[in-house]
Image (tube, one colour):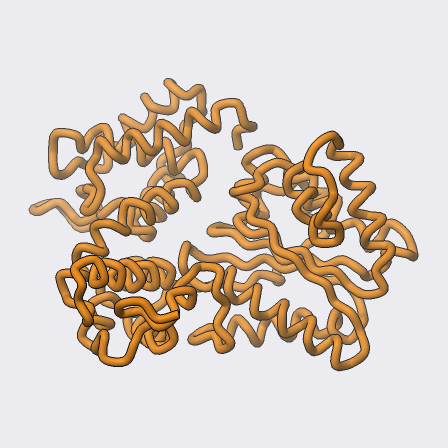
Length: 390
């Protein structure tokens, strides 16, 4: 139903899966090749999708599984699939419960141990005539909670008995490579070549994506290419399509609030300010413990200054590690994490004026107040204090 500048605002929802995925053709082809034995009724497959936030991992997996199940039905076979967000359900029991709910929506949400839930899930799979694909989104959150054994259980199911043979496949989705978070037994069930990389979108690709969404979600005449170009330009700093789509939605809402019939540039700028805080918090929530500690050390130093040197951050990082009872990483690994944080747009690095190239770098944060970052990171570290450390 149209409202203000919107034709159908649901087309801007994170849950919406477009019929055509733009600029993910290479990743799609790789998935098709990997899952061809599954679609032909052959053996199981385990795959890892890796990329930063907003690079299309989740939407690609949803569209791919939908197409996989559709093609299987046309061939007289059956493929069931379900997706679990492991950040929202970061324990083994809650993840298993979500899977069971696919088969039995009325299954009680309490009163069962993890071992009992495993047995229930296994029985449901055994009863199915076809194949089951389980998508574990943001699976690194599950690993950080100490529940990586669940992946081993699921990946070994097809080998347990003839009734389960070749009946379960896994798609793991993460912002980082998680093989180093798996124990050897679980790692043995994955082929290291079964990794599909999702790079950041370019500005031109982001423009195409939000143009397609705008055509579906907005009324004709309520926006122009300059507006879409501005949104794509802002979001291109991180290559994040989710950020771009959310900015488009917020810009439309702001236009509606002022009773306008077109989205203006000031609506976009205000949308960035309103959207960025949430997006930053989501990015921070996806960091590993070492990255959180480095970010906390940096934010503390930047409370009363614009820039700080890398060497100062490393010293502060070691103090923060001592506070949180964590062994600090060696310099090479420390600096690798700093570059990863820069790549995600959380830190900005540049060479110090007058220094020898590559010798001294200056670090700052461009978009988030240091005090806000300190509060966000300390909260996440405190929440994870009782969880198993890496």
